[in-house]
Length: 315
Image (cartoon, rainbow, N blue to C red; front, side, top):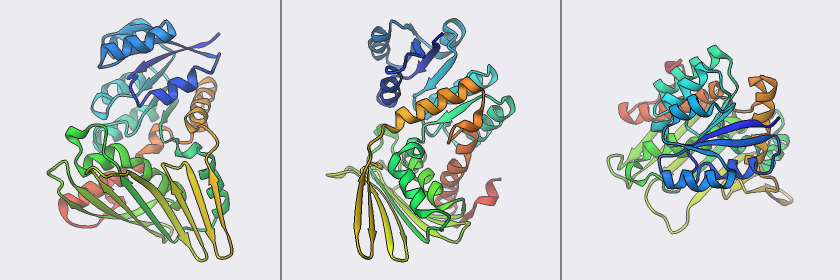
């Protein structure tokens, strides 16, 4: 029998997952809730799903077996705590909480209940990212650079800190994937009291490597989402939100284009984990994501206190 699925939020964040689920006969969307009733009705009509005016009612009356949470961070927290307590497997779009203290409380609840969870850091499932991991093997990355130069969808609250926490956390997660745990963070910000601002986050990794992530909230003629990893005799450059990988070596350059659908692969992994009741089968569970959010929190503290912040201070 097909598993029943509920969606809290069916806007642009949800579309890649809805598309992936539409191709699967083992799931059925039965319940929809969105801050925009018209959007909810449009999506629900395509699935013959029931529309609910609030998420709590959807959980009580719709009783979905799985839940996708694709609303902005300030709407995520209470739902996360409720589904964790009810042991309903859930998939949440990053960051998964409005701030670090809340994220830590949610992670503790998820870990205590043992519920299967997934955070939409889909970079773990990008085929060219896996190629890069295989190329690197066990070798450390000496230098890493990242650029997240694209306005947030929530422009009215898009300070640089907001952009880092809600959007560029995806790049932070990928830097951790390739470079390992972060030991220390030093962030510098400009214009943080305005929508037009930016910040630079300097990272010291536990393995000895260093990295820099630059974010900017102001409008650009062309967005720039890139990651560059460098070592002796090689450079790995990801362009277009991980859609292309350029491997430059001394004697050749290899270009690999993403061929898979990372959202589809992530959905498959989450459904398999939920069916097995095994949280370890998901690459980025909610408790796992706390490591990435801790780096973002350290950057915010660094800006506010004008000093480098050791990640051990947040443990």
